[in-house]
Image (cartoon, rainbow, N blue to C red):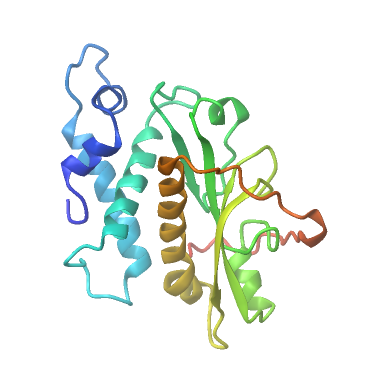
Length: 225
């Protein structure tokens, strides 16, 4: 584990939940450490994919915000090991990061806080799976990212937190994603989860339908590829 420790995972997930999520033996008394290590590895590789080309990797020392982001991403991946609808009672948050998947209402309801998504646009503008492409294609000088509460629509839920960035004239969607929008998503998730932990009002701001735009999908290429 390069960006977090086993103790960090233990602080984020109760021990009983670790056993329920990470050991497939119903009689197990301890979590499967290899599964935990695999979840952290996937989170670290995802973060490295976003940061590669901007920094010398792996980062040392590890910024606190990066450690927290890896823990949250690893926790999200580990929860996904269970079949749909089989979330443990201790689950507080569901996170989806530009994932292009639909989380059913009954699954969202199982999380104590609900389900948060990250969308790489200033919602309600540029809803849809290729928001980054359209921001570049339309030559917009500014774009951003939004963490919002998932609902039954596509990118339509209340916005909890947002940030913005400039779009450079020579940007491609991949360049903009790696340089600005992927790191922004990590920061916004950390900010949102800190707000939840602090117990502040996190209902979010309803999206204005008069400002909403929806762009079609245009590409199958991964932004982090």
